[in-house]
Length: 110
Length: 114
Image (cartoon, rainbow over all chains, first blue to last red; front, side, top):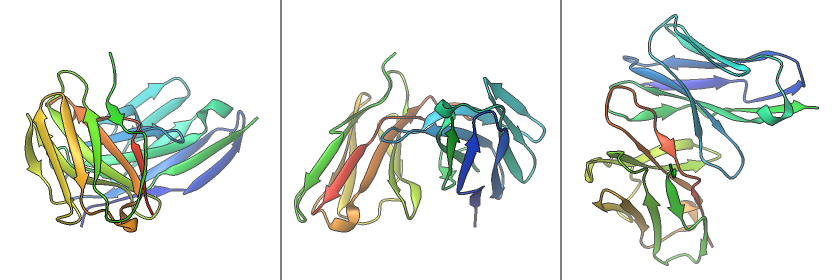
């Protein structure tokens, strides 16, 4: 059965303290992996798409990387406004049926 | 460009009542998705449409749930009769077709069934 697991469930960082979030997947065939940010009371906001192992994408303080079994979302020198839940999703068949992980709740303290 | 628009943002109703959730996708997007989010199960895909045609409704939990897309700019998700276990946040998302186009989400409808 296809599965997506995110860790840790929750993470508290001091402002400026860099860290990484993990998304591991067990799927029959990866067509794409997506990272989203979700703020309270809002819908998920698209961040990145990764297609193949070795690929990297960057946006401001965020960098996403992909291997054959997992993806990392690296947060460099985070700020309080980076506090959110970060979700990853995989598309295994190209049919647009995403499988979402349960997310990592990130809290960045000033 | 306007994003995905959902209404109402909040709905509180009593068990047994009919509930209708509405969604306007991003103009030009030809895929539309309905999701449900709960603390226990996270985000679950309920049904999705391509060019207004339902493609896969295997995630719809029961016959009490139904979804329609009468045209490219409007979709509804209906629950009849509603039950307390239907309480959740329901999201609509849309995307372009093509390889790995990301889905763009609305801000959801928070549904509480008393």
